[in-house]
Image (cartoon, rainbow, N blue to C red; front, top):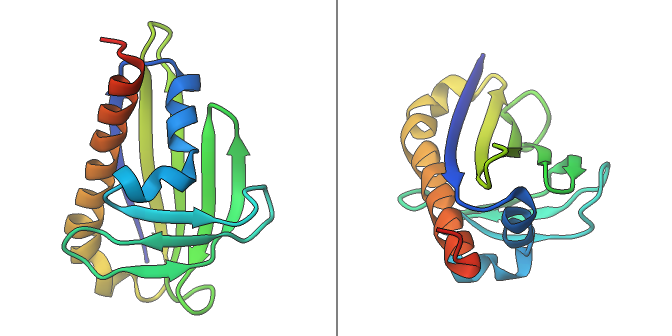
Length: 149
């Protein structure tokens, strides 16, 4: 069973400015309503520690493997619950240069595994809402910091 969630927001700033705020992980507790911490060596192939606390949901810390970390473009990881195949999530953050001084920030996750059907309702509500809240807060912080509008 598979499930995908995709959200996006247009931010009035170039990708470099969005990336600077997005990858300042030490500031996440100050503004991020969903991801409270990202620690470890952020490099392809490395495992990192990520603390998720979605509003209205249960918090959890897990250790996904970094699949991509392309400056100003993409950050992607693959995590799983207990062991691969049970409930796996490939989380993708993309920064798309719109060529007009704005960036589309897209956050998505592809879920696979035998437990996905049990979590479908939570993914469609709590998880998707958490993605949207984070996207909107990132937009607010970046636009305020760089006063681009």
